[in-house]
Image (tube, rainbow, N blue to C red):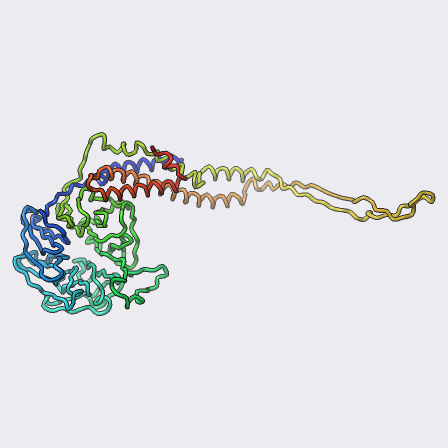
Length: 520
C-alpha cells in the first residue's frame, strides 16, 4: 500500500512539473532601453504605462512617453557621485516625482520638467540618498549616513537619533493602510515604529547568533566596511499587513506577525542565496533578484525568470498593471512579454526523463541504502511472535567434595592399608527449560517495535521527500540549461554546477545508485 502511495506522489509531482513547464521555459524579454546602460532604478506611471522613468548610474534621470521608443534626459546630477538610486511618485499626486541620488534628494512637481534639490547632506555618506517613502505626515529619507525625516514637505530635515541616525539605510517599507507603521532596513538590523517615528524597536538583528545574544554592540568601534551585515532589502505585502519579507545574504526571511518571528524560506531553485532586491505584486507574488538573475517564489521553490535576459547585473524590478516585469540592468531596461513555448517533440518533457533512472527506482534505492524498508518491521514482528515458542534454557552444575578424602581399611595383610586416600570428585548437573506462554498474547517487544516503527516511518518519509524534490529539481535544471543561449556562458556554468550538486546529493542518499544508472 505504501509503495502505491509513493508512486502516486511521484505521478502527481510529474503532473505539477508539466503544469509549471512554462516557468522552466524561457521568459521573453525585450530591450526598451535604447542604449541607456547601467540602470539603477525604474518607475512606471500606473495610470499610463507608456510613461517610464529610469535612473542611471552616472547620467541622471531619463523619461519616455512612448513605452521606451524614445528617451529624454530630464535630470542631470552633478558632483562626484551622480548615480540615481531610487525614483518615487507621491502616491497622492502623480505629478510629484522624487529622485534619490548620490548628490542629494531632488523633487519635481511637474513630472520631471523642473527640478529642485530639497536635501543635501553634511558629508559624502549623508549626501548619498538610497531610498525614501512619502507619507501625508512626513517624508522619510534613507541615506548612507543615516535616516532623515521632514515634516514640512522637504523644507527642513531632522536626523533620527540612535542607530538609525548613524547606520547605512538600505530600504524602507510601509503600507498606506497604516501610514504610522514603518519598517527600516539598515546594516544594523530592521527597525519598526508604530507611532510615526516617535520610538523605534529593533525586530531583526543584522548579525544574528545562535545563543540569541546581541553582539552588535561590540562592533560599534569598527569601520563601516568591516561590519559585514547580512541585510539587503525589506518589503511588505500590501494585501496582508502582517507579512514582511527580508532579503539577506542567507536567503529570504518571512514574518507573518509583523516582525515578531522570522522563518527562512526554502532556497530550492535559488542559484545564489544572496538576495539583494524584493518585489511583491498586488496578488502577493514574491519576486527576488540575486547575482544569478530574477526569480519568482511559488509552491515553496524558486523559478528563474531571467534565462533570456542578457544582463550581468540586475538592480531593480517594477511591475505594471498589465503584469509585465521591468528590469533595470547594466545592459539597459528590459520588459517581459510572455513565456516562450516550443511545442516540438524535441522539447517535450519526456525527453528530459528519457535517460534518467525512474523515480520509484531511485526512491527504492534510497530506502534500501538507509535500511528503512517496511519489510524490516514486518520481520521484527514475526520474530517477536515466534520468540514465545522458544524456551529459556538454564543449566546448573554442583561439585560434591564430602567423600573426596577417605580411609582405606578392612584388611590387615594388604599393603597401604589403613591410610588416607583421595577419591573421585562428585559432580552434579541439571538442565531446565521454561516457557512464558503469556508472550503469545502480549509481548513487550511489540511495544518497542511500535516505537521503532514510528521513527522509521518518519525517517523514510523524510528521505522520500528529499529524494523526490532533488530528482525533479534536477529535471528542471536540465530544462533550463537546454533553454539557455550560447551567449549565456556564465549562467550555463552555474546551471551545470547546480546539476552536478543535485546529482551528488542524490548519490549521497542512494549510495551512488543514481549516477551509476545514468548514461555515460
